[in-house]
Length: 496
Ligand code: AMP
Ligand code: MG
Image 1: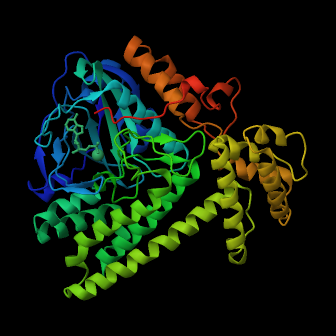
Image 2: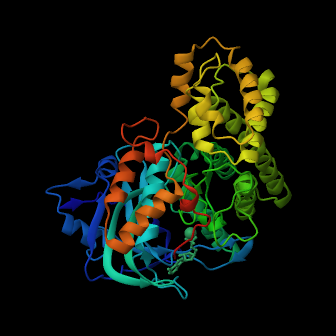
Image 3: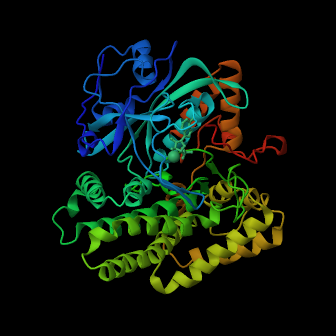
């Protein structure tokens, strides 16, 4: 048996906020993976774990006791264009769970059939995107990036029609909140201020409880989210992560990474890298992510105006002042993250300008050579204060050898200013520079094996490696390596 400690709250906001919906019943669900560690953190109790029963629950065939399945309403700006009516078209919230840490988490099936918000979609997910989200979101968690988590993945035993017929899957994901910027926009577009307040109170109670008694909790909520979002996107940037579809309906008000679609980690570094096949103008390119974060927060601030002050001018000025803090927060988090990646741990404000210049210079050299982003940082973490043959692994990644050698000389001057010895610095650098990231070509290989041959071994193997991304693991060298020319994945697809 699996027992879920449901404590559903969203359902009490009223039926303007959702449609009650039962998942589709699929013919032959099979469990691929269940995340026991996460289940334990959530307080989900298992007695005699039965994979077949788990498959039936996590495909939506059996509704667990106390679940109240529903599809949530939301709107959103998609590639800059406002759509007042989106909503969970292929996801169903089973309910909310109070985890051991006291936080309320939503539990959602994705790919479990049509809802009132499906429009022309089939409400299904192909197996590939399910495996991709499972791997990516769990890898992000192990890389210390705030993210939704993956609790279970199943195959449905039913084909879904995409460019061709593909096996169907369902992922069960867990979030500190499934409320998006677009959830607020949904009610703002309808001029429903009472609903905006209800939604904001729900978010504050569950995700910002420390603000409940503050003088202006709505302003403080916006300020806290601005901080979280700046930190989140700085973390993405420091890992070379590209979300791919930063629409306002894909931005969580809890500051977590959500909606893993055509996202990707960069191999060769390029400032304006885009993978998503649907992002034709590069709106969500790597180096645009910080400013898009602010654009999305501005859309949220617009929705919150009626709550910030009775006087609209004052409300606008409160919102403007808060939004102005985003840029500085982002720069601070980015610099702190990048300094650590480069082994700069003893750093004051007076060195910030020079350090930023040093970091930007390296990124330019990396861009010029399209050198591998993650390997560059990992190899840097192996270097000594004195140049030696260890440098070669890093230099080999660069076409422009002179540029990287000159940069290394500058870097050595900078780290020589610290008291840390080689061993200490290397250890601290290796705690923030992953050896393994979920590389596109490996995910592609996982998906091909699973979709084409029903073989999940590559999925399990990659998942295992990504559990300990900062530890060099014996016999796993192939997972460190960038793709061979013929393995390069140039585009990623939503697969919906
Ligand atoms: P996303 O690409 O996940 O951000 O989804 C954008 C919108 O399209 C959301 O409202 C989704 O629920 C909806 N959607 C995406 N794929 C499907 C599908 N296969 N069936 C129904 N709705 C979908
Ligand atoms: Mg979405």
